[in-house]
Image 1 (tube, rainbow, N blue to C red):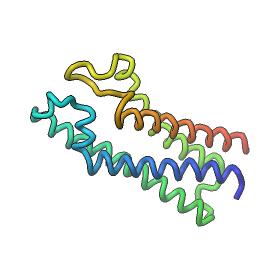
Image 2 (tube, rainbow, N blue to C red):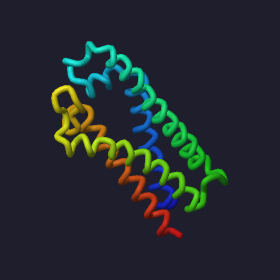
Image 3 (spheres, rainbow, N blue to C red):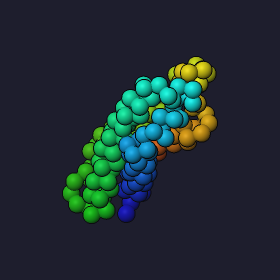
Image 4 (spheres, rainbow, N blue to C red):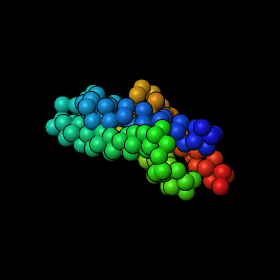
Length: 154
């Protein structure tokens, strides 16, 4: 296997694991995720249940990306004729990188505004959100590095 295949495969596998974990957390542990985002004092509000239910959509989006990464990784391992050109792989990795970046970017205004403020927002640099914030940045960087290698390979 060439280096280009290895970095492409690494980006797919890392994204598969990350998106699968996000599917589990947001799709099946939506109340735990909502507790991170909503301060304890506001959890008795009926809006809390609505937010927890809405968080499942994040699980669904992450699940779809996990499935995409699984399919592409399986194709890579199988060595078939699909998604073998650098341009095809770049397009796929651009979409995956955009997914990671959008999830990272969504926390930036919260962080810049001082994170949790009374009943508003959530902590970005502590607890589970810190891990999510940093991992989305790392996943974006890995996908971006794979894109650069693919573009350089011709």
